[in-house]
Image (cartoon, one colour):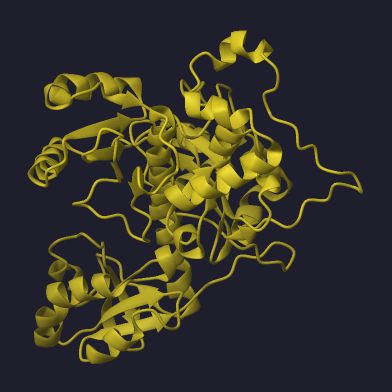
Length: 440
C-alpha cells in the first residue's frame, strides 16, 4: 500500500508516494535516529534509495563518519503533514553520532521508566541535552558532537563549571564523545576526577569506500586544448540585457575581465570572506568550481533561513582553509551571507576596506564584518539568517553603537523578515534592511 501525501507549498512542489514501512521508518528517523548510515538507509529503501534522494525525502551529507542521510522537507511532510518546524541538519547529525557511538562502544541509553539513578535530573540547563547512559564507568551523563572535530576547550570548561561539583558529590562521570584523539585531551586529563573524554568515530561506507566531507579540486582536464581566457562579458550587448541591470557594478567590472584575472579575483575574495558558495562563484566571477584548482570545498544541503525550514538548498561551499571547512554548515552559510553584503555594496576584497571575521569561530559580540568606506570611519555589518531574537538584535545594535561604529548595516534572507525588521529597527539604521541571496 502507498501513501500519497499532500503537495508541499514550499520547495519542489510534487507528491511523493511511499510505502507504509517507509513512512514508519521516516518517523523513526525524524524523531529518534537523527540520521542514517548508508547501510541503515539501504535497509529501509533498498533499490528505492535513489528515488528517496531524487524526491528529497532524504538528503545525503558527507561527514567525518562518511555519507549520512537525513530527512528533508518532503520526508517530514509525509509523516507530519508539515515541512517546516524542523531541527537543524547539524542537530540531526549530532543525534546520529551519539546514537551510533554509544552502540559501537557497547553502551546503552537508560530509558526514563527504568530503575536508575535518574541522572538527567542534574542536567538543569538542558543546554547540551545530556543522555543518561549505562557505560563501563557506571551510569553517566553523556554528550558529544563532531562539529569542528569535537568539543573545544571552551566547551569542556563550560561542562566543568556546570557539572563538576554535582558529579563529584553524586559520584558519577560526565562523558564526552569526540572524533578527535587530541582535541581537548590535556584539559580533560586535568578534570579526570569527573570528566571522561572518549574518542570514537563510527563509519558509514558505500561499497567499502568512505566519503570525506572536505574535498580538494584537482587540476582541470582540458583534453589537450588551451583554456578559453576571454572575458565572461565581452562587447557592449550585455549592457542592455535585463539580467545584468541590477547586478552590482563591481560584479560587472569583474565579469569583463579575462578568465585568468577572474580566477585571481575569486581567490582574493575567498581569502577576504573565508567562504564562498558555488552560486556566488558563478554569479560574481563567471567561473565554475573546477576553475579553482586546489580549492577546498564541501558539498552539502542547508536551509537558507531559519524561517524557511522547507527551503533546503543543495550547495557547495568553497573555503579558504581546512579549519573553516571543518565548521558546521550554518557557519559557512553565515560567512557567505556576509560576503554577499560586500558584493551588493560594491566593496572590493581589500582588507583595508573590508575586514570579515575569518577565524574558526564567529564572535557573538563582534560584527560579522567591518566596512571602511572611502570617506573614513567604520561601519558594522551584520548578516541575520533569522535566528536572532529581539533581545539579541537590540544587544548587537547597542554594542556596536557603544563601540563607536558610525552605523550598522543589517541584512536578512527573506522579504518577510526584511519587512518585520524594518518596522522594528528601521529607525536605528541609516539605510534600509538589505535582502541578500547567497545560494542561487
